[in-house]
Amino acid sequence: MVTVAILIGSESDREIAQRSAKVLDSSGVEYEIKVLSAHRNPVELEDYIKKSDADVFIAIAGLSAALPGVIASRTKKPVIGVPVSSKLGGMDALLSIVQMPKGVPVACVGIDNGENAAHLALRILGMS
Image (spheres, rainbow, N blue to C red):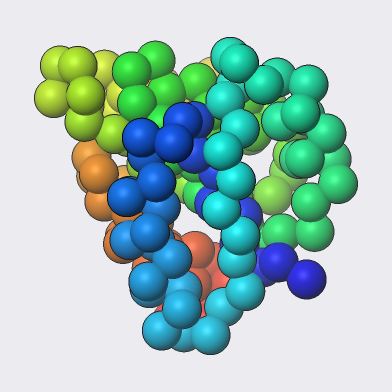
């Protein structure tokens, strides 16, 4: 069973996912890292969300950062978005993640802050 699903929009986001993984490893939490883009793999992403037994999703994405919002629109489980610095220093991704419509909440941590995403996941799970 996977407790936390770490989803990245592209392979270039793996370094930030590894930061989350390091924190989860130190707490003994089961997780997996998957590359599933909201734009390039929408069908696979939808299928993964439906079948996942994860209690919390961490979604790491840059640019338009659609991934966290798409996940939140397809599940009632908590979603933590991690904006990635690329264009515009990551502000574009940050604003995309925090401006979700009512009823589609996404928690958001700082730009490139995979560690805080994992710490927040641990708090949500009651393990901090």
